[in-house]
Structures are given as structure tokens and as C-alpha cells.
Amino acid sequence: MDRQEAIEFFNWEGEGCTISRAAASYVTEITQGKTAEEIEQMSFEDLIDELGRELVMTRPTCATLALGTLKKGVHEHHMHKLAENPS
Image: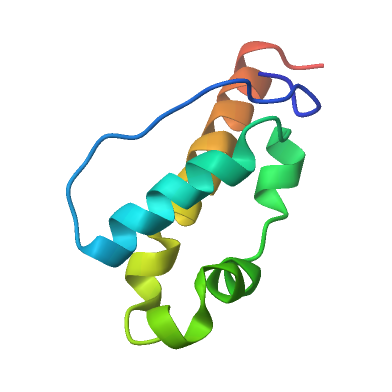
């Protein structure tokens, strides 16, 4: 995936609390069609607001786990591609 190439499809599989599972589903929906650069720029604070701050503030780590994991994966994929094809 190029930094400007949009993600067409991905999914998640896992277990967790209701908040982490709902957030993972939501992150999957809102990131379809976004580029790696757009995903890396997504804010944890914006995600919390979109999920409903009053609902998730008792469990912010659970609410942001999926986005953090996705951002890390996108970054690691990009770094791996750079190592394979140094310019």
C-alpha cells in the first residue's frame, strides 16, 4: 500500500469489552477508502467525540485501541516498504 493509496477493505477479529468491540467496528467503517496518510492523521480525541465522550471516557484505552493498532500497522507497513525499496 502506497501512502496515497486508499484502503479498500479490511476487517478485525478479536475479543474484548463492549466499548473496544464497538470502537473497532466503527473504526473499520470510517477508515474504508482512506489513505495511510489520512489514517495516521486521525485523532484519538476526535474518535472519542464521535463515539460519544460521555459513554467512553471511563474506558478511553478501550475506545482507542483499534485506531491505535491500525495506525501502528499502517506505519509499520510503510516503514517495511521503505526498507524494501530505498529511494
